[in-house]
Amino acid sequence: MRRVLLCVAYDGTDYCGWQYQPGVPTVEGRLNQSIEELTGKETAVIGASRTDAGVHALCNMAVFDTESSIPGDRFSFALNTKLPDDIRIVWSKDVDADFHPRHVTCEKTYEYHIYTGGFMPPMKRLYYWHEARPLDIKAMEDAAAHLVGEHDFKSFCSVDTSALTTVRNVKSIRLVQGDNELTVAVTGNGFLYNMVRIIVGTLVWVGLGVRTPENVKRMLEAKDREAAGPTAPAHGLVLAEFRFLD
Amino acid sequence: MRRVLLCVAYDGTDYCGWQYQPGVPTVEGRLNQSIEELTGKETAVIGASRTDAGVHALCNMAVFDTESSIPGDRFSFALNTKLPDDIRIVWSKDVDADFHPRHVTCEKTYEYHIYTGGFMPPMKRLYYWHEARPLDIKAMEDAAAHLVGEHDFKSFCSVDTSALTTVRNVKSIRLVQGDNELTVAVTGNGFLYNMVRIIVGTLVWVGLGVRTPENVKRMLEAKDREAAGPTAPAHGLVLAEFRFLD
Image 1 (cartoon, helix red, strand yellow):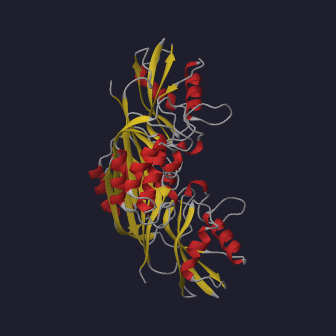
Image 2 (image 1 turned 180 degrees about the vertical axis):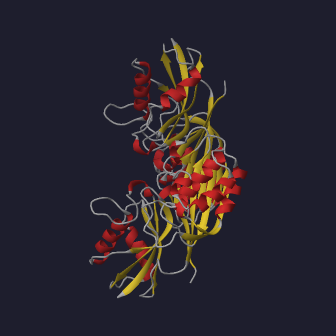
């Protein structure tokens, strides 16, 4: 038995998220199905990030075990012939049989895309959140600075979480302005359920003047989901970078 | 009776082109329906560019006549509440009652988007043509130079054309390289049926070395669709700029 690692890109628009659920389209379910079509064996991939319904990825990670003779680096090409074009295997390779994508140290960057122009161009509507009101970028950056570092992010986590601890370490939050566009890039080694979307919703609150940067410090201290801002919509979020650090 | 001009953006993915056809989704049909919902009167817009199935637009133009009391510049907001989010009215304004968007001098720029990386990122698949083989950009630019100016573009026109003359004036063809991306921007005051897509298909032929830049000069002279390259797929094309010159 060998273990193969896949780097998976997908447009999350038409999927009920990563995690397999019977009877609905999921990225994980579609991957299992395509590997079974290729190898003839029932397969259950193990994914690194269980992205929500509508969230996209340029590089989620998944492993599966197989007795197939297909070389590790050829699985990407072979699986892409079986997958729909809204899921692509960017690359594949053999890994140690005990490699587990959620049990190794990694660094992930999520990018959140906001369109700030007056009307939403139709070709961007599936990948951007629309916020046409003026945003105070300096205030958003000041607010973001309070969130960088190791904190208890209980206020920035869906109440549905099953995490054992709500302490996480955010390495950086960068705001990048483009032509009618604002990208919020959040890097860390792990995130709670809805954490990036709640961070973005809160930063936009600050950008609009609903809350001050100083308020955000108190939101962390409150350790209460009610204290933080709204959850930004799923479709603006993309898992953009994924690096294994071990 | 007043005439109102609309600047219309759309994602062409789910439409059988601009032009109204009974029983299938078209941009024109959807516009007529939304104006009727708003004004209560049967309406037939007149469009400037009858884009093909799958082609996108940032700024196609259309006029319609109405007795509504809605100010010209407010129609955009009102119609956007009736339209699906893959069609947006960018702006609207009152124009003279005899203004006809196909009978005034204009300059249009079509952009054709090619993704040149090894695999097609799922989030770009609806808006880019994929060509992973190396392209000789210099050769493509040399070929494009032969097409700029006033020429008989009969070889670069679908045989289905009903145009009275196949002479057109291409003002410029620009190739812009980005990160794994190539944009071909074609500007002119009018284009034949499939002309931009055949120009792009031909330039890619040259980029791949299937034809030389000098061949393209002879393609024009042949005045025969069989002489030119293939028609690039519709989904890479977007009507990007539209300027009335009168």
